[in-house]
Figure 1 (cartoon, rainbow, N blue to C red):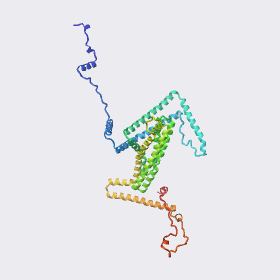
Figure 2: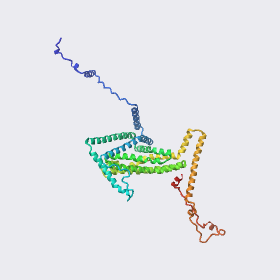
Figure 3: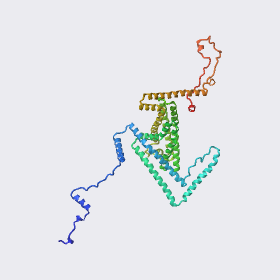
Figure 4: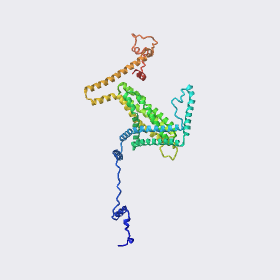
Length: 477
């Protein structure tokens, strides 16, 4: 037996098992076995979403959308964006509230004036005597807040600031989540489709006001949506201003002005829409020609007011220091190295987007007018479709005819009452005057045909009104 001291160990036996397997595969000309990749299992919702997204991408690549298809896509996108837009508005105003409270509690800014503070009630009024005391009270309150915060221990100050920063981070994450939803819904849309989407979202927000108006036949609910639009615009303008680097005070000024512009211009078409709806309800309907004229007028008023709003808001943001596309274009209008759009091109693009969006939202208003104008006819046709009983169908037709006839007779009665009460038929108001010819009274028994046809005095005329005042009809109705 050989001495173990002179026996060499097999080098292969000293290798780890993994290395042995690798060398054996290389010797046999086999490739190393690839590690098995385990694909994560998708949930049913993830699978459906991925499948839908891939099909949409494939369809957009191989089947370009027509103009009608683009409008339909924008309409669907606008409907999807309604919940996200409302949520984002709440988040934007919460962002403003967080900053307002922090700066007020640390004494960096003065607190908002309570209701009634700073009111002078006219030149020379006694209320002006209290304005200096009110101003002093607010300044003292601000100084007290600043002293209280500065007196806190350093650890408490750090915790207070950290809580404020954490609140801002959470608010931004919530806003970004809603923004991703909006961007996903509008991804791949052209300029026209994005404008349609914005118009649908805008009308969708005010649709509840029109629905309540139609249900109760009370136009007051339409006006109740105005503060909502101002609230939403204030929040979005404030965030845009702060993200542009403006301090809180300047951002509040810009957003406050934009909110006023929004409410003021949204108010412009509502009185006309309200007036037409009252007329339709009173007359139990309308003619197609009258409805077409009213609808066209509504659309023109709304488009004009929305374009005025866009000009005012964009100019306000640019002059306030917000870095909008218009502000950048205006600042570089004389810069030869600037290759972006000119300021007038930006304004033209804004006008186009606003006009399309306003036209879509006007369609919603006109639809509401249509329900008021033809609601009884629509209701009758729907009931006749599902209820084929001839007797009840005839009863519905007769009921509608009677209502419209009564409306016409009521209009005649209102006209007569107005003319009678205003004294338009009174001889003292209606007769212009009498003139006797210089040659004296005519002899009707001895006169030529020419003399007979020549008038001997001026005929009187009646001054009938062309349009009855709405105030009178509303008072009597």
